[in-house]
Length: 594
Image (tube, rainbow, N blue to C red):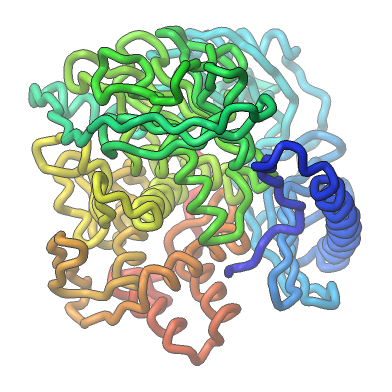
């Protein structure tokens, strides 16, 4: 294991409804665990805060700043990592995140910082009022201001007092309707506008597919199966075993909740209450607004769009499979590592040909297709794994693009890492689930029915001609569209896991090249996943670029296997294979342009 957070995991609902004594015993044990975990966390956070101030030259934390903990991780060897966001004179700082690293005795080991400069502004008294800033932000994306807060935007080398405004209803649902807009509190200039939901199908790709007149022809694999109920006489609500006929994964088993003798709902009590609901064709702003799916025989969907529950089968199967992947592989209890199961809304909006992770909703959103390029919901397993992984990334490094264009395409290396790691872990969900109806591979979106037979792939990313994905790093990566740029780190991961050259894995033929033509030997997918996950959760921050990602994965490998290990050397060779080396490390990455 790469190490687990010290928060207590949620417990599954007991299968035997009258086991009161066992539940009481478990509850007492959980309470003791919670108390111990909270105490350990408090001591760790206290030590990390003191270390950040004592080592201000390294951490960049000034006397006018306060730290707020976002995450605390304790490794099996006792090392501790505390992720902070900060405030300047009580005002939250955008781009000021950092991770303080401690040894098992809580001594300072080092820091990972998002920015290298100090945070300071002449005054925290804004010239613009909050309503004025909200109006400017709403106008910039033709939406409605929902939340406005004063911030210090430190992403540029010259920090500025600003307002961060959440704007809803701006743009089309299929490209994301909510934005985080940052407005200069002095001049009123819009500094940045970033979509809060990042769709699986980017605006650029959507335009390309429409220009080419492509119509996706998905590869479905549905079949029916008999229902499986809870035994009669069980108390309600009770955990039940159901079946579903999906679009993409064939017949699947679903854990559901029986609420009455002949009534079931698509909620999984064994996985933190993971649930799928129906948005009913509306652009709902919250999961709670969705309508629960109900069924009388615990047999869901029919494999086609004629049954509204079919999309829900794929979604529920996807969110629970992703939950299982993170828990079994990394010991992570849910997307936010808080024990809560993932949520999903299907049938979202009108003619939405996309799927999203929505930070506002804290859930997955799936449209039913645009009726033009996509005539079915994008509920394939790796799509769900990819999008929910964006939720994991948001809860950890929270990579941010360096810019967003007028069509809502995102650019920059941190944004490319966001897409790449979502692809890496989305593929990992497929491998862990190992469903014959949806065979695992290093391809992304292969079930969607695009003409090139996949959307992205990791062994040779440039085979994705639709997005112009690249195999290797170059200086163009600084300002490359994030899906195109994601190939650099995805390719590095593939080389680390499987190595270069020709091979057949699970019936799929791969042929992975390297930048310098040197052969690279893989260390296996399991080890590669652990290294990349450890790097993400401990050594990456919102501004991490490819060269910093190389350093982070090397540090992760050193933690787990030692600096002289085969694994450490393989990480170095994998990044060299995509032209990310010490020799071509830039002096400093680009800051946000104002």
